[in-house]
Image (cartoon, rainbow over all chains, first blue to last red; front, side, top):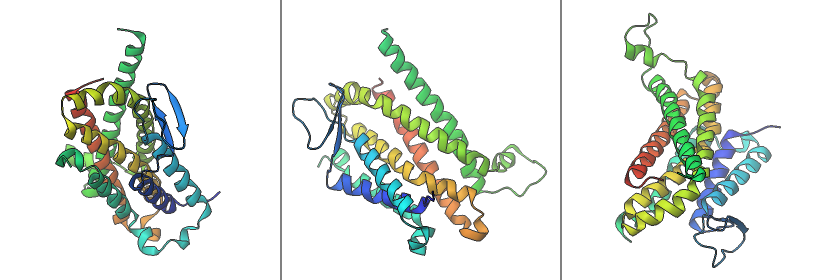
Length: 104
Length: 160
């Protein structure tokens, strides 16, 4: 089975960004009750943790994209500078969290 | 100390020790790609530090990275319930934000691992420029150093 590292990075980063920006908390973990939940967030379950779901979904999307799509379909520029996408996502997460430092 | 606290403490210490091993390996690699040594005779300590064969470290770095992410993931609910609430009560929102950034960047590091491994196990002259290897390694090194230091700072402010 072929696996494209570049498609994985692209798929992971784009899906991670989309889930984070649009707050698509599909899989949620509730640490007080120890419950996992798929779908809209529940009330009366205590604090919700979306990070696990975020990582699991991004891994699934990245993995599927990496297996299904061929390496040569990816533009050469992206193949050579894929790390740039990682930096963009890192900066974007910093921007989304700016409220913690700016008090917004 | 209860058994639960003892398990948490053991996990936290293991998490820290794996981080140290990871930092050591990735910093060696970063030095090797940033300042490759041409001195074949061994030379000074600094020269020998830069002479390591980075490819030999790549799989170890990836394995340590994934192991440490899993360990962090196991400890994360404890942070969420015990530490984060305390930090919020102390109005240390910038520290909470730092930890949030750490968890996101640690996850984003996962996205980088396949291209990092591929950059180290592919002959650069044929398939990709050496700068690709350098960029992937330095970025991963940055993420690892950032997550390590942030974890350390947050643990100093309010530990598990």
